Amino acid sequence: MTDKGFDLTRYLREHRQRVNVCLEKILAVFDPQRELVQAMRHSLMAGGKRLRPVLAMASARACGGDIDQVMPAACALEMIHTYSLIHDDLPAMDDDDLRRGKPTCHKQFSEPTAILAGDALLTHAFHILSCPKDLFDPVPESDILLEQIALIASAAGINGMVEGQILDMQSERQMIHFIDNKEIGNKDVLMDHLQYMHGLKTGKMIVASVAAGALSAGAKRHQKKDLSVYAARLGLAFQVMDDILNVEGDPVKMGKAAGSDLQRDKLTFPAVLGLNQSRIFAGHLIDQALEAIAPFDDLAGPLRAIARYVISRDR
Image (cartoon, rainbow, N blue to C red; front, side, top):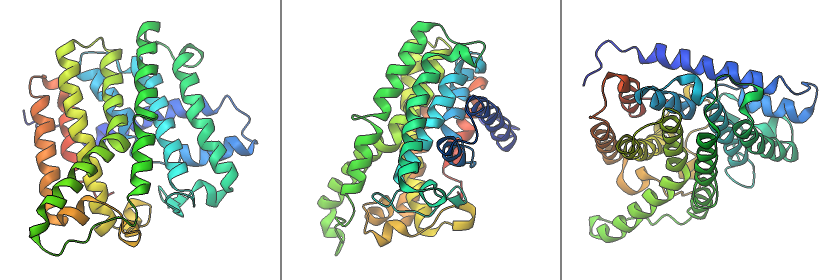
């Protein structure tokens, strides 16, 4: 399917706005004068692609569901993602000064406040999932909410994003410098490690986002399976493009510094494959993602458009 005439720019703008309205409602419960709340707001409402919540909404719609039913999970996913960015930016980790075009949380406030703001976003995300009736209507049935909680907790934790993050940290200063193509065996090993690491760090939460939407819509087993393949390939392609943009992206457009991976001698797809082959690899991954959702009808148009956007983005 070509999904001719689909306006992705408009779709993303409208769905980001829906997410932002709900996130504002979540923050409005708290006293805005509290430093912790200010730090949470600084990072959570700084903009960003809102890719994970948008994927959850697009997945729900692809399965014939109501977008409103997935909004608690969509907001929780964005809160958890933002917590991970706050902690990633800390001096003990990536030591970045900019995020989404603004000073990182620890630069705007302090390291202790940033750590605690991240902790608060992570913890409150699960409060939102477990008690959505306080702020959302309609909400999924409690058995679906419980499945979403288990799914997202697993994706974010020790067997998901957090493990991927520590593997990523350990990869710094360990990049093997290739002399010539005779070292293809080592390249294969590094590619396997990269795909495993980013399947955890980036992929798990993207898979969880798509799965949360499918769950809210009561998707059939074969639909969940196809969407899982789509999301896994999409998540890896997203990371490949992130690595490419870290090399050649415009810091103004991206809202964060470029070139940091090279400075840290980090294990990345361009470091192993080169820029051109990395682009080709990302293209293959997107082809596989689109093939996985070929059985879906026009309701999956946004998912297809998002997949194509991932490898053409400049931020």
